[in-house]
Image 1 (cartoon, rainbow, N blue to C red):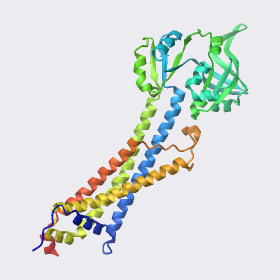
Image 2 (image 1 turned 90 degrees about the vertical axis):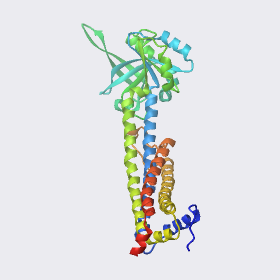
Image 3 (image 1 turned 60 degrees about the horizontal axis):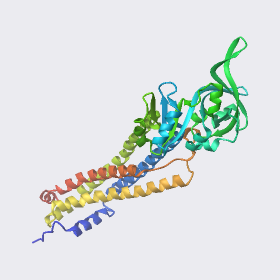
Image 4 (image 1 turned 120 degrees about the vertical axis):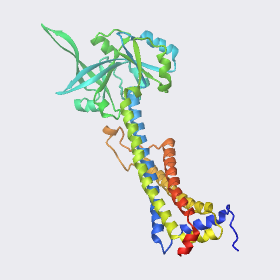
Length: 406
């Protein structure tokens, strides 16, 4: 009389799993299929980690560049003279920890040695601007003239106007010449050249002094075209600032000025995640096929185990854990390979990129904990679902039918 095996016999389940994991000379394709499933999941996790790291790193790099050149917060007037020294003083009293830089702005035509280029000219307080804009702080020179400009590297190159050279700026305002008028023009000395890493900004933006605007364009002293504000937590503080602002001004965050751009990047990131997750999904099919082939080739062994007292739960546990082992091993191997790949990309300059397009010459890789968690969660769900069906199929094996056919 056969002794019935207890349902909690973990040693029995463990030994059978070890036996099925070994290479079977009579059925080599089963082992190969399991190996392909392992490699497919490992490759999928590795590619997902590296791809999501690159996407997130690129997004952060663009954010960092745009954050500097667009400023965390900007106050704009709805009515003329709405942004003035009185408003700035109120803001300083209510929010003394913030940094403020008022500005004038206008469009100009820059000309030098026959080269002509349209530009956006800002009139700023050099010291206040340097306090909130590290790129400008690094570029500004020591020229004391009020008619000085700090321009982007791209514009400086096109104008052939390095630091110390002079350029002519043409304004839209008219000045009287004899019996007619012509656009207002003035020679400015190049006080410095900045490099933001974004070509569009480096070719279009220039900074000059507030005094130059007040002198040339008759701007009223103490009344500005806008106010740039530096805040470490602009998302949290924008609503607090709104509560004390008058109705004739509006406040914008840098994320609102570039909302479409970052929405597109976020959508691309999600689409890439789903597409690459299909690699793991395809690899999981090999787990299903491998386990089903194991079930079919071991039908007589399963029937024998059932007749010796093994329960359906134990049979189901054997094949379910077998699938989990193959999938989990692939996931762990993929995590290690992905971590190694990210380390190599961040340590060595293997892939270089055009800096004027991407803002950096080094491939930015930054895999966040949330992205990694989603990768592990998605892979785990696919592995669990892949192991369920073959395990259920194995537990439904009828020992009487199998042994009678044998």
